[in-house]
Image (cartoon, rainbow, N blue to C red):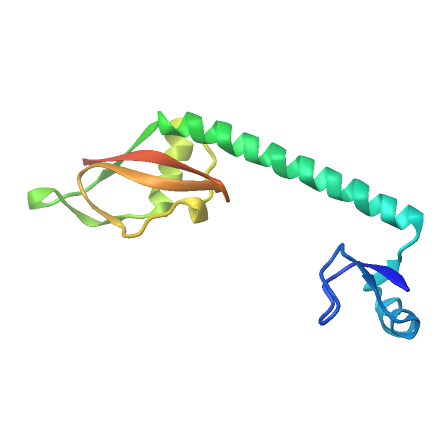
Length: 148
C-alpha cells in the first residue's frame, strides 16, 4: 500500500515522502498512530501543492535575506564602553549589546543568534561582525566601539 508520511518514521522515511509499505503495517501502525495517510490522488495532489508552496516560501525568504544583507553592509552602529589604557575595554562587547544598539540606532530587529562573534570585542575601534541572515546569505555589520 502506498502511504504519505505525516511525520518521520524510523526505518521507513521522512515527513512528506511517499512510500510503499505492507497493508498490515499501514493499517495497524501508521494509520492508528496518525503517522501516515493513504496515498490517494487527492492526497498526492495536496502534497505536491504543499511542496510548491514551501519552495516558493523558501525562495521569498532567500530574496528578503539577500536584500536585507545588502542594506546592512552599508550600516554602522556605535557602542560606547568604558575603556582603560591602551584602548582596552572593561569587560567586552557581546552580541546582546550589538543587538540593542542595532535596534536603537538603526531600528533593525536582529536575532542575537544570527551574529557570528568568534571572540567578544575587547578593544576600541571599528570591528566587522558577520551576520548570518539565511543559510546562503551572510552579511557584515560594522560595529564601532567608542570610549565613554
